[in-house]
Every structure is written in structure tokens, then in C-alpha cells.
Length: 426
Image (tube, rainbow, N blue to C red; front, top):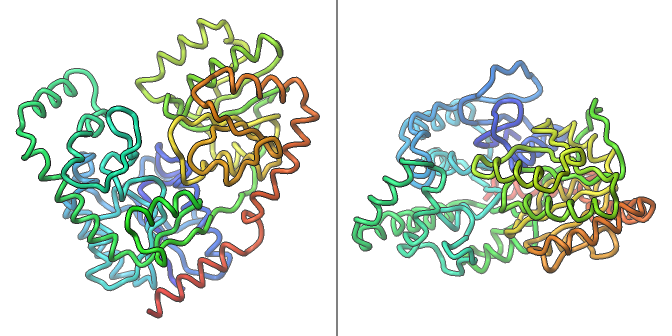
């Protein structure tokens, strides 16, 4: 079977990548182990990569610089034509989309070529123009997308800074509301059309499955398959001093990095030799806030920022730590990869009871679920407990592997291949 995997970015090829891209890569590895011929289509590379483990084809995306516009509307004709040409030449049996920017161009090309498509749901992209379902007042939007989405237009321009953002916002205020509604109405119509053409949606948690069904996607099209496999860790040269807590991901308020730092500062008052290791990179608007937070608490010697690392090295770093903290402040119904990896590596997880985290973490058994997740002291209490009793931390961590047994063996691979075969033969 020949499978094309579509991913906006990929580790080793791009500066920007996250758990969604790791899942795309591990999907490829799972399929290749089953004898499939797999190749990637992605946006132009950031680096010149000498890597023959995967066949990766860069797609020219002339209008990617338009950002939100080109992601939400099929305006990048060049990308559509290029994807069409490569898929026509390669003739894959099925196309598995794990992308946002390349979603529409790929769907259009596959419709013309009559190639069946699947879509792994990495966030709320197909349901919401901002990808988050977050309204301006920071509550979850319960409506289906449509013209009313114009109300969140400031969220769509939040990636711009300084004078450009001010100009955009001032221009938006002068546009009549009925005109602002039109592009969002069109966006909803086109996405609803292509969602009907996707043969199957792959979700990573039960809460994500329910979200899509509640939205109106037919239940028989939504499949919960966690197509991720723990890779081989690469020994890190970093020395991890215990007792230690670890966080991995983008440093930002949505991921709760500010609350984590508040919690850790309180933890150090009881466990003075504790260390907090931060793996990742700061959101530009959060960088100064984070630095000031660390300085104001005087915990510079206790907080070690390791920066972005390859996933194989992250696994090694996790294995050396005592506890992993995932203090997300917005629902991650798709199961944060760092949470799954921590459990698989036998580490207890302290995480917010939000999104799909309770499907993996059993409170008090393999970690802790924080109900009051906006309260730093609630995280501090559990961090103090585990970092002052690392034997107990290990005991909880050892119980975590049972909840992620699907990461081991061939069950997920076999289920995915049966689904592919069913869709190809329809």
C-alpha cells in the first residue's frame, strides 16, 4: 500500500514543529514497519537535510506568507497545482492529512484525482478559524462556525505586533459588520463541504471524538486511534540533577508556563534543591514576562532552560527526571504528546484536569489531576509532595505504563491499516 502523509512541518526539516508533527513521523514509521510505501508532502524546508530515513517532498507554497488568509481559504493556487502534480505522479492509494495550511490544497487535489483522504485532528482547525474555539472573552465557543466568527477577528491578527497590528485593528473597526461576516460565512461553507469529503477523521482521545460528533460529523467517520509509538531515546549529554520536575512545549500562558513558575517558586521554599527543566521555546510575547518571573523569584539557579531538543533526546531527559508537569490552561483534547511520553517512560504526571487528560492520568494512581488548574498553589502542593518523596514518585510512575499500553505492540498499526483498506475499497 502506498500512503502519502501531508504535514505542514517536520522535525529536522523545519524550525517550527510540535506534537502533531511528531505523531505524523511516528505514523510513517508504523506504516513502514508494516511494509507500506510512505512519503511526505510538506512546505519548503528551513534546512538542508541529509536524511534518507524518510522520503520528504517539499511543496512550493507561493502565498503561504498570507498566513491566516491562505490557511483558511484556497487562495494558494500554486500550492494546489504542485500538490496535484506530485500526487498524480506518485499515485498513492490513500492520503493521510496531518496539516492545517496544506489541508485545503490537498483536499482539492485529492477530489480531482479521486484519492481517498483521512484527516488526523490535531486541534480545532476544521471547526474554528482561530483553531482554538477560544472566544475573545476566553470562553469556549459552543456554536458551529459561521458568519458570527468575525467577532474573534482580533484573535486572527494576534500574530502581528506593534504598528502593523494597530493598523489592522483600526481598519477592521471601520468595516461594516455585514461585510466582516461574509468571509467567515464562506469559510464555514467550504470547510463543511470538504469535511463531508474526508473519508475518515482520526482523533486521539474520546473527548476529541465527542467534540467532532457534537459538531455534526457523522459518528461512523470518527475513529479514535492514537497512532503514535515511543521512539528510541537518544542519550542526552545534559546532566539532570534530582529532585527534578520537567516541562516540554511552547513557553506561553496558554500552556500554563507562568503558573508553573509560580508553583515551582513555592515548591523551592520546601524542597530547596529542586530543579525545574524547561524544554522548548518561548512565545515571543511571553519571553520577557518569563525572564522577569524567574528573576523576581530569585530561582535562576533552580530553573534550567534547555531550549528546543530533538524528540529522541527529550525522551532521554524525561527518563532522568522525577516528575513531568503539564499545566495547560486550555483544553488539549488531542492528548499532549509530552503527557503520553512521560507515562510511557514511567514518570508521574501532574496536569490540569482539562480536555482529555483524565483519559490518561488517573488521579493519585499514576499522577495528579489538578481541578483548580489556574491556582499555582494547587500545582505546588503536588510538586512538593512528589519532589520531597521521589520513592513515591517512582511508585506512581511505574503504574503509568498500563494507561499507554497502546504505544507498544502493533495494535494501532493494524487498526489503521484495516481502516485504510476499507476506505480504498469503498
